[in-house]
Length: 500
Ligand code: ADP
Ligand code: MG
Image 1 (cartoon, helix red, strand yellow):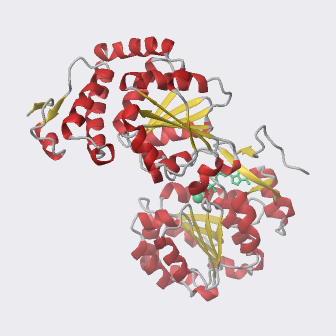
Image 2 (tube, protein in one colour; image 1 turned 180 degrees about the vertical axis):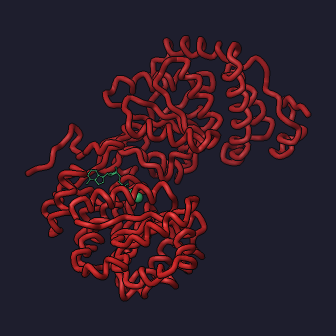
Image 3 (tube, rainbow, N blue to C red; image 1 turned 135 degrees about the vertical axis):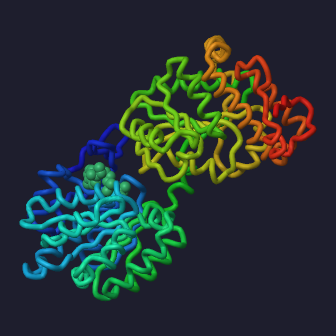
């Protein structure tokens, strides 16, 4: 049976929380046990494998060690749980009583809980198999009791707590002395969080790699992850890369336009583009700004214009960022105003359009553009520049197929009036004014780092920044702390308002 196709010919399956791109391979076509097949069909209700599942499952089911690289949200968890659980029937009952066949390492508690929950679902029709999570920040004795009850098929652990158990729980090392599958999930995060020494210690407690199957899953494979793979996995392991050079090659299939306008027209141009895009059904649109403060201010401003704008940037709490990110991932007809926190790592599967505002480095430009046209979908990108940045940006992006659109095509007249009404709010709304002032300072800092590429003197910088403050609807140039001015190396430059 052919998989269902949606309009733009990419396959998307709603999995409750988010959209997942699937392959055309069905789970039922795999040579796996009936209880697992039944759980996939009845509990998970999945028919088609995701791409990483389709590519890794045959390799892992054949018993090979595997390093798999696939983006966040592509279904890596089942890619290791299914084959690991497949080996369980080979275990004798007396062995499972005391021995734990599957060990999964996870960088944090939340992820461990998610993996544990998926394992339980997959084990639904496998009789008498338990899942236990051992994670930091919880009562270790409760975990010991739970381990004592036996029949643990899957143990999910964070590194620190796992070591605690190796050191203090009687019989624990013995119970893991015969593991059949060892998984390091989100390996890049494990290393980013400084768990390398912990991993090395854990390795010392486990049977040698020749006596177990080891699987390493990661969204990215920097050299440190590669090194871990070389130590933890058997030689000749298979490397499955479903990401490839996708981000680097985005420019080959993403349509890209560039337009430049005067500082006065920046917001009107932005409003015009957003209004045009809002006519697209199922719009999911990211606008990147050069700094967190600019993203914040612009989002606040466009909210007053009643556009469906969300914001995400480094000046927000992690909780607020997670909430926005989830909202954007699951919703449609949304515009995300973002700083570069979204350029790497986060996966929003169905972004239709990426707009970048202001000068940026080529690698960053390509990464941001890579947020659209994922998984073979159509996407497009637009670069909105200040007129003073156009030449520098064209030099920076030389070789990329950028097509210039004349600003006159933007029909900004009506937008100018709406923007100027919104900017009037800056005078009345203290929060908006603070955001504008912070944006001014961030602007100054950002372009201060670009003096060379723009061929600007410090005087020109301050002059432009002050002009920028007026386009923010501010009636006076925001004051800067003396030490901020010092740090920026702008002491003595005329035109700054300095306090303290
Ligand atoms: P990753 O580890 O790659 O970030 P997860 O394993 O957490 O991804 O999976 C992301 C989401 O996709 C989960 O909600 C998961 O249940 C769902 N999912 C996994 N496999 C499939 C599939 N074959 N079809 C539909 N949804 C799936
Ligand atoms: Mg994962």
